[in-house]
Image (tube, rainbow, N blue to C red; front, top):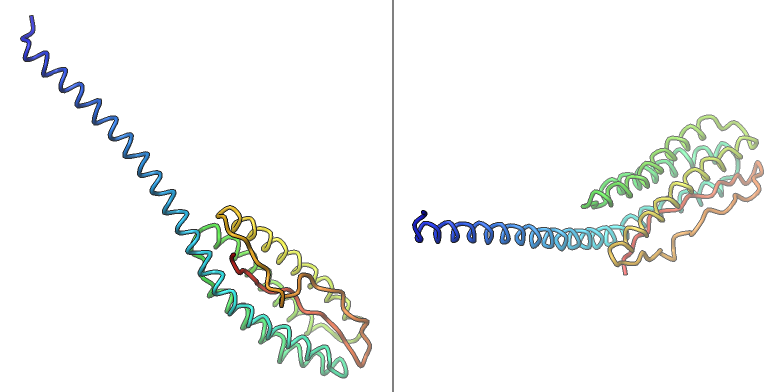
Length: 206
């Protein structure tokens, strides 16, 4: 027959083990809650930084718009090509570099922003080739395909960004200065070639 003190010891050990197990489970839950809270805080902080940086990125995009405006006022194809080479492409390079420096401090934000960066890098390369291959007015129509692909990429980025903001209880505010969409180019003539610029980044949080 077991000694009473021995039985009480086993009971105490059992109770202690159950208490430890319960405490451990509780700690895990608390830890998970803390991680969730930390993740939410990280996302909100990332959104704040991204939104603030978007103002500077939009300034760089305005330079892209202005460079296209200059190109579209060129008097002939030669001057138009020159404006693309000397104004538009450098402005796009500066914008792409600005996009590369945007703070993306969560995996989701990095992935979403990467879509915009990829779209602009692709468009930059396509405009480079467009300028080199352009020989006359008939070739201006090719720009519509470049613009369309970039517009699709920007639209996908904005939709994904808006969803990410909403998931973190924030609202994406589109800068009214940035065009909501890219309109079709005006009819191009030998004295007035036209190719409208693409959308930019706009990510202000509310």
